[in-house]
Image (cartoon, rainbow, N blue to C red; front, side, top):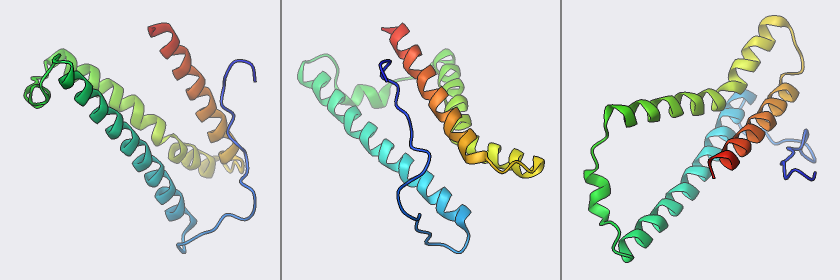
Length: 129
């Protein structure tokens, strides 16, 4: 793909292992572990940024802890969280809608939505630069 888009695989190789009696529990555990991995990466990057900023004398790390969030900032953060959680929980909503309508292809739909969201995020990131 020339646009740099990441395409998710539709199916994993081999049979997917299940560890719990209910496959839904495995899905939730997989989502949580994926998020935990992302949080760990973000935490490492944040730590790096804080250390670099402090080493260059731009801020002291305790200034981050003492930072007072304005109503405007709180609103912006709340809006971001709502969008973020909506994306995370989208697969749950899709599966609930699929169950209600008898649709048997919720996974493919979810993959398409994740790929579209990723493309949208990349476009937004490019326009902010």
